[in-house]
Image 1: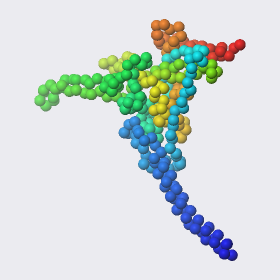
Image 2: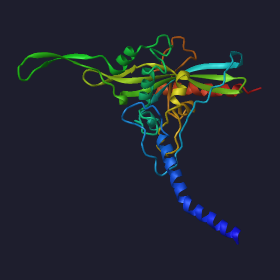
Image 3: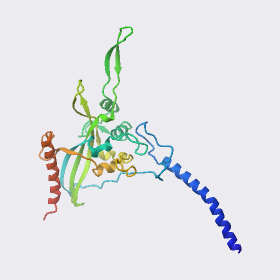
Image 4: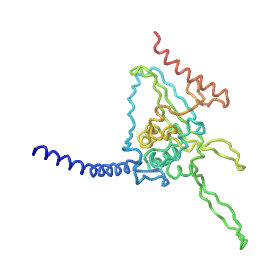
Length: 300
């Protein structure tokens, strides 16, 4: 009887304490969730949320880049360099235009690259040969444009004044990205391996009449140097809010649409393919040749 009474008292205490423990546990989870955000945001428009998600018990997403295995030169049976263009207006590339939120780390893809370059986390090069590193001043000049001085007439006094207007940067003006890939057949792995070597944002330029006239390379990022940084920011998934991946995984796995503009195959003058439909067909033929080369490696 005493044992039964003691058991009843213990059970009663558990019933009374249970809700308090659950409430405290929920509060701790809420605090943890409120802190489960990137610590450093790209733009001031997006900051870590001070409240939890509410519907989901979110955990901190500590994404890290998987290290590439080293490829020894003696194990390389075939190698070809490919240049591709990514058009952000294509439906599959909508993630490049997403402005970010309190979970992704804030900022579009171009803003992430610019922020990392300005803070010295990665180097911004002048071209995809990586021969010169841009200074912060040169980088800002490429992105913002040069200041313009115009003559303005004061409507009251009629006096002419020289007004200097600083340049501005619109992330949506980055219409395309150019990537440089190396396709390598590794005997040790027994397969063809593709690795991105360079990423270059291209800004659309206009004439004085507002007519588009081409693209201008802003800078070039050495992708292996940027992988750890890009792994800290998540990519917008238009199909599912919770199923997101880091930018490093997105680029490594090729979850984007692109087309070939140039390869190192039989191209001593290093020229791009001519535009239009013929250029697209030529680029696709070159990619098919690389795939067939991998198949040929296994023929007896």
